[in-house]
Length: 245
Ligand code: SF4
Image (cartoon, rainbow, N blue to C red):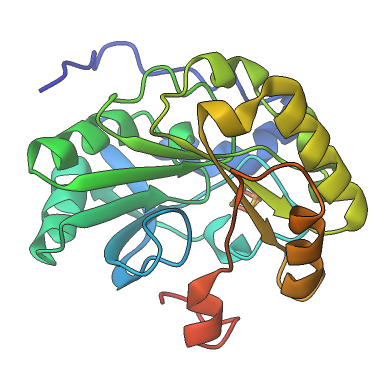
């Protein structure tokens, strides 16, 4: 198991001054605890793991404010739980696939040892992160699913490009597309960094903003033959606004 220093909590150095007010709830969370929005089992709706039963550990608080965010309820609602309690509740489902998501999980230092402990317990562990934070300290056994934020999100200035040199070939990069302009940015970005030859690249549409058939046509008309289009499966199974599913 990896060792993590308890004496030097990771500073929130990736949070710009104008976004610090969004993370104040985390100031009161002591070492050994996390602020958790919810833990539940559902069907994994995205990524190459889509369709599989999965336990979701949703951390509270995010420093970004994507215009189309579908989990704003996680911004300021959470329960303090010890890392051990989060681990036990997650393992109790008996599900081999676990995803830690948010909010933004990498804002909370205890997420790093939690990820390792879930790997140690034999789980396949996914981490979903906004792409604004350093992924280098994440246990290499974890499958990272990292966003690169398109311009219409309003958060593309936060993309941490250095992460592209840290991600593993087994990690996945996700583009959420809200417009034709977002698609053109995505296509240019993938081609510029040759992302489709280095990682699994996922493209999906903002629910209700771009129709799946439009995105399918854009992808088919492009030379990006390795890019995978995905739909948020859970929004088709359950009501699109349903929580905890
Ligand atoms: S990074 Fe994720 S949780 Fe944060 S605002 Fe964007 S979509 Fe919402």
